[in-house]
Image (cartoon, rainbow, N blue to C red):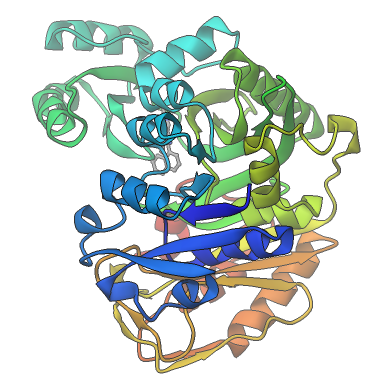
Length: 445
Ligand code: MV4
């Protein structure tokens, strides 16, 4: 593998370029008009114009991107996260052109994209799933009688959804009747399928995911967990590993279950098994993300591994570099997603970053997509950087993070740094006592 096209932008494009440089691999970046001055464009071996700023005219232009890949004679495409990273048709087309797609098999992407089929597959493999219908509902009567059986509150979920999109919480039958048709209509419009199913709603839970990795020889390992319970409107804000909540018994069971889940689909490359964990420590499969995730640096900091390097090694047909017994978790790591946003109203705050001062001191890693003087445009996700803090203990991480964010100076745009400081000052958070309702209950009025 001598040349890789990066079908992405911002911090993740830079992150992939860094590993490629270390491995002596050339990189082709693609960029829209809005991104022509971005650091990732300058960092790549070569950058090729892809289109106008809107995503449908640039980073989602599958055929255009494949044309560029062919004309640049790349060996592989790294899709990053978002955009085309979980688009099975794109992966298929790349492979048909003789280009390696750095990710799992297209069939796996497809299977996991269907939340009913993925649920059924996991259930068959002996992976616990949330009590629910597990098949597409035919009528509102069927939905109501099932919900009655399971017990309210329930969640009505679209089969084509995921990541919190296309799901509605229903506290009672009245709410279910009210949401049923509109959820189906919306599912049809967004995902091209109006199939919906029901699950019991697991309240006050933790959202814990397990990083897994597979190679084409059938080896699969886990790389421990990430607790992603600190979210707002399904937007993750802080992720950490180890999870401060899991007991050693539950933790071990989750690792084993995640590896079993990955084996059930002969998983290749980097993937994440998302679980919801209730107060008693029961955990249930929610979905599998078939890509490198935004929060992968948390895992890199506790394992000392380079997950992008592993992705490339495996995509080349190589074996996983380490056995499970050779992979260790050390210390504690926390990632803060720094957004150009109004911290009070949680709305994007695009604009020119006139000042960007962050000290990458001991215990801090910054994966940034921007430099001072850069502009956050309204066309893409407003995340400007990920601040990953690590140390020997969680206490050390909390103290390093507080010191770090107190010194951050960003001008020209609003950011969510004030939110990080209030999270860090919260005594429940300090004790590791938080669930998916933490932000709305404790901090956001
Ligand atoms: C759930 C759930 C509780 N019960 N499903 C959100 C993201 C997507 N992967 C699935 N998600 C959830 N599914 C059942 N049956 C809780 C979540 C969830 C969540 C829900 C409301 C508010 C914040 C949340 C954060 C993480 C997960």
